[in-house]
Amino acid sequence: MAYTSIGRIGNMADIIILHGDLSELCKDLPDNSIDMIFTDPPYPREFLPLFSVLGEVANRVLKPGGYLFTYTGQYFLPEVIANVSHGDLVYYWCCATLHTGGIRIVRATGAQNGWKPILVFAKGKPGVHRVFSDKYTGTRSKVYHEWGQDESTAAYYILQFTEEGDTVLDPFCGGGTTAYACAQLNRNCITMDVDPKAVETSQERVMMVQRYLVPDKDLQAPLWAPQEMEL
Image (cartoon, rainbow, N blue to C red; front, side):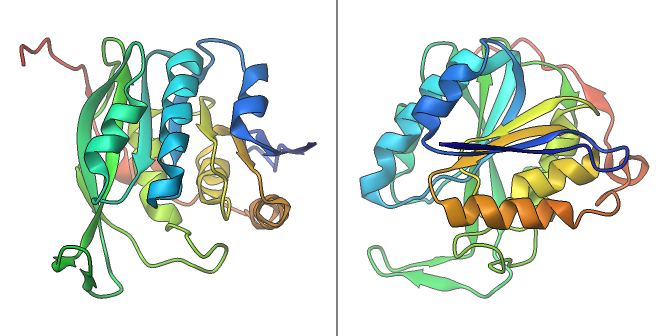
């Protein structure tokens, strides 16, 4: 198990990259210490138990009112929602990231798939966040990881749900997309992966950060306090 701290890059935030399993590494994170989780676990059936582990970790380490954003596929959506819903962690919303690389047909259903869900969970009573769009179109990005997502989508939601200096956790580092976005938005980030190559790639990627990805004044929406709802 290796520990890597990129540290501060100019006036940017602390980026910490860990090598190892999230079940073990997250034990060292204090309760109620994380402002937001933004992550992308693998989707196939054999990885469904990871969503349960993710829910357990999020329920413990998120601050009250904090949010978990997780990519997933459509096929096992009910199981994913059930697995992530632990303790005070409850389903909040579903966002859609639109595919830009063309429509693909899912052989198991015959569906023409043009979007991917990003599930949003809140810990307890939802906290204040900015007005956000639940539909976002990024660009296809597999340069740093075969399952990689684009940094603009991560940056958009991190921007609307956190403030500068907040801490974002990504338990499935992959190509370092969340860390890269956080470095450019002045958010602290803790991320990890069981694959040492992913850790190395992420470290190299974050070290290339030179400026903010998205100016706050351009994309930061007005604050919105969640209302009391009877569902």
